[in-house]
Image (tube, rainbow, N blue to C red):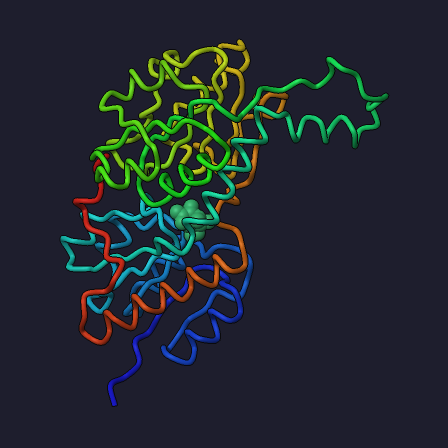
Length: 329
Ligand code: 8YV
């Protein structure tokens, strides 16, 4: 029988995922809760047939170009692939895969939680109560903004953007979107979504903006200082995609100056560092990159990684292959 591929996994994964992997492959697991150091990844890339990194590992051209010939597959545990140099991988003939679909619903749920939490001042109210400052109900106290009936501008209308649109329709929001490609008319009708070819024009008319495009060179600071200024001052912004898509310093400045009403952020430009000025603001809800963090989601991601590895090792094109062509926005 063919030798099992040697699979190097950089982070601790759920037990069931590790057990399934061990049944199928020759696996080098990371048993600690800490990420592997860059040197350790460089070292293991000398013996691996398959590398399974996560969002916290930078798999750049140095790692790819110094890896041994036998490294043929980078099977990412995660959907975003901005930490992997896809071009260097292609040049070396290394296939890259990701884990879409399995975390779509969880990320859309978390986005919806933020879309509701920020205008309704959810965490601010809870802080007041926990700190013992709640002296009683009052008719004009802790008033937020109504979400129902408001215009939601979705930047990036892929799987997650569409899942957010479905939820937001049920909350009676008006759906607008900007995307590289316009949706098929049937899907547009089903979502009751209005397409905006111009991101600038959409931003100027929205009540809430939510970001769902991948982070690529084309989408870095897509929401630049100039574009953020197009938002009306009553607008809220939600980001469960990648911090780099928004110019975070410009956003912080505008939040402090009340040039924008609030923000719900699950991702940041320099994770895990968070701009201390954000922590001082009441009109933000901040989460530590929890968008896809459900037990079911993580197991689904693990299964997806396994399917990609198996299919590749059986000589097929793996189902979730990522190509350098996917780098646009
Ligand atoms: C994960 C994510 O936490 O999949 C992504 O792109 O950002 C998150 O769902 C992460 O990728 C795990 O590697």
